[in-house]
Length: 131
Image (cartoon, rainbow, N blue to C red; front, side, top):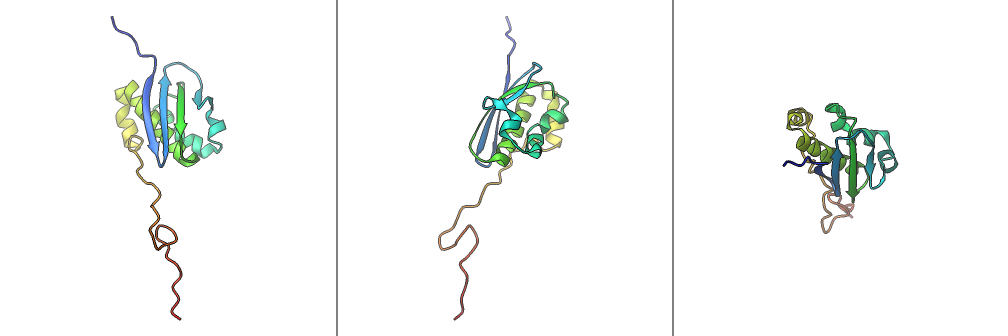
């Protein structure tokens, strides 16, 4: 006896944001922390970045439950995008080459550089005075 999975799971990270994504094969809404995605990500550009894997694979009629923690709006949208892409790969392995060619399965490892002692920021030094 085989049981059909009710959802597919993917985790995405970007800067200090972590998104846990569950996608369902039903036609519904995308909810982020119990709200709509447009309530959480206020700018349309960030919503487009987050939903890019669905647009590329023509799976826009999928519902998703997303829990996101940490970071700002930009990091959260990138984390959601990676989480959705990974969940889509789990749902249908045939979508993997299309997502990989657009670079949606690679984690963006860029983070803020840490501050160094003796400097004002990561690289900015105090002003030098000759006399």
